[in-house]
Image (tube, rainbow, N blue to C red; front, side, top):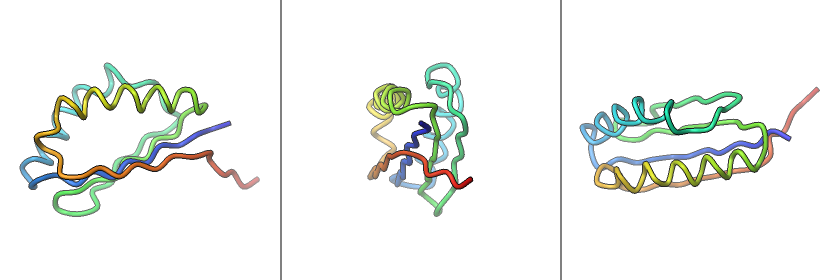
Length: 92
């Protein structure tokens, strides 16, 4: 069953957001597991929301573990992180 992770990040400043996302753009394709879909939305001048849908909860859990490495390496740009996860509800 498809499983989603939704991560809201608030950055310390607009410049921090720019630097973080520049690093993410280079890092993500090399390290993150394949997602059915992945969308990032700028929710404010210094915040973003990433929603990724994975094939299973196991893949989503792996993604969480992998992204924590990136977050740890770039914590100086981040003010707060709120993460949600769960099974994708599909309407036929």
